Image (cartoon, rainbow, N blue to C red; front, side):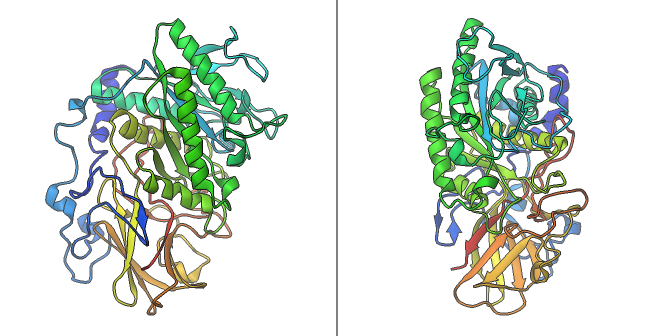
Length: 495
């Protein structure tokens, strides 16, 4: 596909990626203080009906609200993407992947991304066995296709034979190249590697992990590959650096209260050790997805939301995974689902790394009471307006108290408060419960409590999901499927 063809296909969607509220647009939310997170635009007025594009139900005042983005005009940034100076510091832009089964493409067969439409690359390990010498002449660069690397032959498994099926990487790299071509009419070469280990907790992915006969080598393996690619790039007269680490993980650490701190340490170790190998000065950012398949109040799920709030300069959660088609186990994706997740990673990478924008996902900023029965949750909205998804199955079919909540949950102590209705008011969701809430011990959450059976309509999904999304018109370059941003699972205690 030629660059003009790429531009014609992708540019209309690229120009709208950063649309948002007029107040605080592009500003990442700050750290939490009590039940609130700073940042985002304030809600105004009542709620607009869906028929008028407001994304919600009729407000109590009976009139459409005047939202901040209505006043400013949502949409194309001044000048458009073509006027931007994109950040491409190296000829070969490196991405290191890590995680557990979803990182290595479990259930993602048959692989779909079997040809490389651009110049994106991966390191071929030929038939070499562990341990691998980064100077081994059998190592070579190869087109980035799926499965990336060599297929696993056993469980558990590790690099260089750790891949189960389609991963996020080919779709991610191809999406980035397509967006760069649309924005600047130039090429962009990504060099991706996936070093995740099926079924392993973060304790087996970190630098200080002690490898056994099979697992615990993910960090060391990624550095071996980085050293090898650095050598091969120099041999071809190319510059190379690592821009990002992707983390598709968390199921194993659903009960790990220290998960956020361990992610912070993992990124810092990658940053230091990669810089020592490549001599780059640019920081390595960490992009992660949110897992939505295990445990009520999963600690890792909450950490994947909180880390981008607490450390927005170096971490971004690209979004949840509940909206994608899953395998029948309700945990893993199928191959098109991995492609779509890869496209979302690519879109966010383009915003954060290439455009240098402080992009943040659709996420809760703060929650407050409004009288005895109403809770207001304010959101950072990447591309307004907020809307309810009309395709996914209604959440909480087996939890009657929350069946009207569209994914929202309210707990008063240990009791599930009955949700009567939810309504979108600009960047805020108003939740009305059946009875007055107590003064203390009230928590509001979203997609945090699971069902006994995963989502089944319109296709298999995960056991924790919601219906809140934005209006991002982004369409993936590999799948051709529209991908708005869905709200992250969260929990906030009411002040």
